Length: 93
Image (cartoon, rainbow, N blue to C red; front, side, top):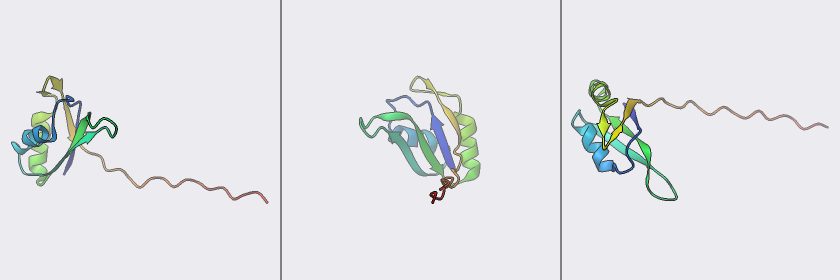
């Protein structure tokens, strides 16, 4: 179950994010999104939890809580659908 965590303080590390969710159940992966140029946090990340019940409990427990001074938003990550294909118009003859 993939979870989106938004409005994270820029000082939070992946280890901090992992610890936050591990207290609510088994975590499969934890990815803090970093800026390619600066290497600093963009203020959001993704956590994948092994059990849906534990994921629901983590979302309920952590959403709208203050972490490192920021009120975080926690919800299920929406799966992106296949990108729409671009329409190609035939060339005029």
